[in-house]
Image 1 (cartoon, protein in one colour):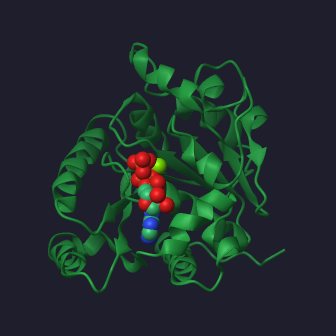
Image 2 (cartoon, protein in one colour):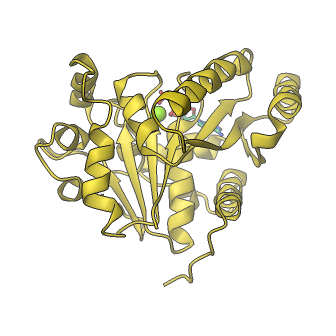
Length: 261
Ligand SMILES: Nc1ncnc2c1ncn2[C@@H]1O[C@H](COP(=O)(O)OP(=O)(O)OP(=O)(O)O)[C@@H](O)[C@H]1O
Ligand SMILES: [Mg+2]
């Protein structure tokens, strides 16, 4: 069975890509076969893993039905981890008419991935807007992971996002669920971080992950080395937190840890 998780928040810079790459790497290191779909024209997940989309072999060609999804997947340096990368051209998809295009990714995933049982997890790294691309991700996934940065006004955007998700659930995808809300860039020396955490606990306790991702320079450095935090700084607090998050996710989903091969 394949579990598809969209990492989504319309707010920019909250840790979507950092979370997608590092939780995917942590799941891969537990023995799961994981595919990241980079669904942001910025192409940051590919960059983070040191994978660059060649011309004509990226997420756009899959959405436009020019290529099969499988033929556009690249292996990363991490064992068990693959990526469907994106580049700036992916932005073209948002400029075309949305009519009949909100299910383009779902169709590709259903025809290429679901029957073949190639992956245990698909993680979709969304762009920072509720665009046609993000809508495609939301109607394709089983559940959403919502990173929230421990900063001023973080909760404003989150409430809006939850309203949008409810609307999609009612109108387009009744089985869509919230896997969890993840507090990112938490700095325990900072009063604001503490206040955001308390507000989240007060308003969203049921959905809040127990794992909190600390603010850590190592997490910000890892992308420039084309590595996940688990390879770049395996014993750092960021690495430990993302490993804990992977374990929390498989516990929440009630999936058994695979034996490392
Ligand atoms: N826990 C953390 N500690 C320190 N820096 C972090 C942490 N998480 C992310 N960063 C850094 O913050 C910046 C934004 O993170 P990231 O790219 O993951 O956010 P994003 O939500 O994907 O952004 P966008 O909306 O542009 O796609 C990056 O420079 C990243 O390296
Ligand atoms: Mg990003």
